[in-house]
Amino acid sequence: MWFVAWVAACGGDSSGIAETTSAEGTCGLAGCDDGTGSGTTAASGSSGGGVDSSGGGTTGGGTTGLPCDVADVVERNCLLCHAPPDGLYGAPMSLASIDDWQVPAVTMPTMAVYQLADMRIEDPVAPMPENMVMSDADKAVLHAWFDAGAPAGNADDCGGGTTGDTEGDTGVGPDALPCEPSHTFVAAAGDGSDEPFHVPESGADNLYMCFTFASPFNGTLQGTAWAPITDDERVLHHWILFRTQQPQVDGGAGPCDMPSDAVFVSGWAPGGQNFVMPDDVGLELGGPDDYFILQVHYHNTDHHADAFDKSGVAFCTTDTPREHTAGVLTLGTTTIDVPAGATGVDAVGHCPSAITNFLPVDLNVMASFPHMHGLGRKFNTTVTRDGQDMTLVDVPAFSFDNQISYPHEPPFVIKAGDSLTTTCTYDNPGGSDVHFGERTEDEMCFNFALLYPIDILPSQYRICMTD
Image 1 (cartoon, one colour):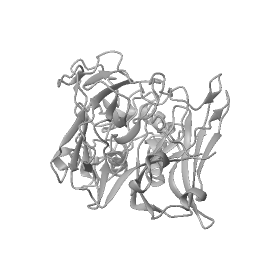
Image 2 (cartoon, rainbow, N blue to C red):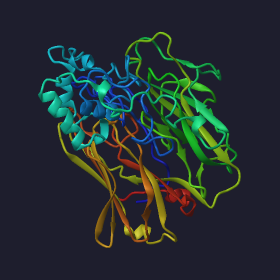
Image 3 (cartoon, rainbow, N blue to C red):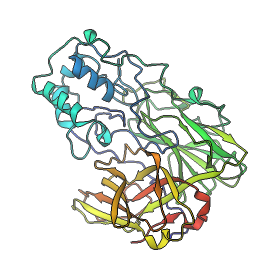
């Protein structure tokens, strides 16, 4: 059936979402791990999120005492979050020096960090780096080093083989935009205050907070570019910006209670980049009857008492309509039945060719944002054309705490007559059956596809799902 209203983009209750593992935290460009296996991040839609190994850099100062080939792999895959001296974005420690790898693991002191990392990079449920970012070649380098006992080397003599300190040259953030931002949504203390949000010293190891805003947009403005604002990097885990028509407190702050019509707008996770629209495409931003919710995930694992944060997003806009308007088409299914104790259970949703046959022009998909909850293990959207299957997005190791966008460059073209199949795979170790719902303990199966021209699809036809 066609659904005529948006379905919740995220569960309302964010408690109990992390899955505990016995492995020490490790980290890659797709996200950070606090050592519990929860990973980072619900990030990013193509609006400021996604993973791009060409940018982001580290704020630390390179590697010390590692073999050259290992230092190169660690720089590219780990130091975005596990930067010296203590890690960033909720990562609990640095992995930059040989000593960092040889000390006992916090979660299993009978093993060294490198021994647990040897297990964790092949973990089928919560691999590190998240979402299979690390290449097989890089894994082979690390496994060989681990097998040898993680011996020391001399990374200082590698002849430029490592990236070293890239602070200030990341190309990420409002200052790196080719335009002057006109609107921002950032975390704040609440009650309309402009003061930063004080992240609690205790009880914020896995804290979700929502900051709410009345829409500043008049219905004609379009987004042309946007950039993440990352303030206190010690505790910031990720953020997502949603749009809703359910009234919200302007300048409010509090626990998240996501409305059922929440629409994904933008997001960020470590490794996320600025996003600049093509010159002929503008992002729809809604109008004065809308509200915005900035959901921020904090990891104050080191219990900083002075963590004050104003992270969020900055938008450039235009009041001159562009040729094409981009927005979100939702794919997936709400028919979800995961029995207690079951593993490998699929929920499958279709956007059939009988529907796309009526497309007057091609749709250009700029990015995919897969969304499931805590039981989600795998995610895939396939496009079938003339009997041939093509992969739109494939996430072989999905993590609720590391949801990122997958940019399509160039855009993936959907043509009249194409069919799209979205498959979500779940494991349910609990004692109760799980079905579709808005709560975190329920499940979801959506691909929020950012595409243009969205305005050829009336609002009631922007969710394409049949069972």
